[in-house]
Image 1: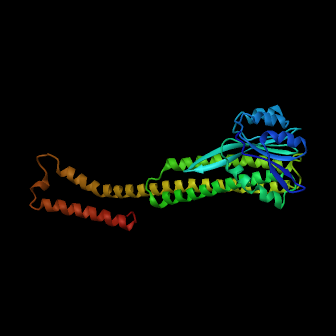
Image 2: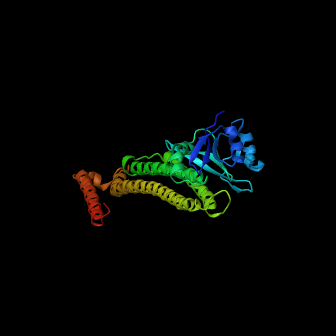
Image 3: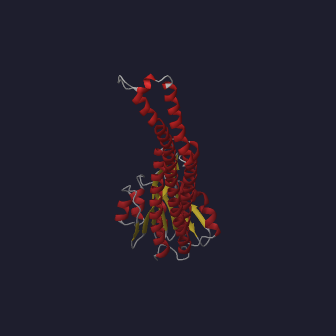
Length: 320
C-alpha cells in the first residue's frame, strides 16, 4: 500500500497520530479529524473515498486524470484542484493536485512526487501544535506551499529573463529566438495557472461553507493578493523579454541602415566616375580627348575633382 500520509488530529489535546489509510473512514465516523494524502493510482484509493462519503461525481473527476482547475461545492464535501509547478532548464511542468474537504477530513490526491505535500509533511506538525484550532489549517498549509512553489518558479523565470536580456543586448549578435519564444510560452502557461488558482482561492476565502472555518478564510484571502502580484510580475517579465527582442531587432536594423548608407554614399561617388569610364570606353573612331597629349591626366584629374567635390558636399550636409 503506497500511502504517503494518513494522520488523525485531536485539537483539544494537541495530539496527532499516524494511522493506516484504510482506517481513515472509521476514524472520521468516530469524530476524529484526519488528513490523508493518496495517489489516485492506488488500488484502495476508490474505496477510501467511497468510505468517506465522497460523491460519485467527485470520484469520477478525481480519477479522470484531468489537468483542468476545478472548484465544486457539494453537500457532503468541497472539491477543488490546484497544481504543483516545476521549472527546469527553461521548461515548465504542472502536476494536478486534487483536494477534497469534508467536515472532518481533508484528502489530497497527488500523482507521483509532489513538493507541495512533501513540504506539508515536513512542517504541518509544528504548525499544528503552534496555532491550529481546526482542520482548516491543512488548507492554509496547502496553499502556503503551493504559493511558495509559484514564488520559486517566478523567481527562476525572472533570472532567466534577465540572462536572456543580457545575452540579447550585449553578448550575442544572433540571440536564441527559439529559447526566447519558449520562455514566453512558459510565462503565459504559468500565468494562466496562477490566475486559475487565484479564482479557486478567492472562492475558498469568500464563500462560506461548513468545510472551511471562518477564522482561516482571512488568511486565504491574503494569499489572493500574492497571486495577483505573481501574475503582474509575469506580465512585466514577458514585456521585458519582448522589449529586449524588439530593441535587438532595432539595433540590427540600425546597423543595417548604416551599412546601406555607406554603400549608397560609395555608389553615389563612383556613379559619375563609372559614367566617365563608360564614355571613354566607347569604341568610336573619333574621340577628341584620345588625341590629347595629357588626356590621361585630364581624365584622372576630372575623376578626383568629382569624387572630392561629392565627398566634401556629403560631409557638409552631414551625410557621412
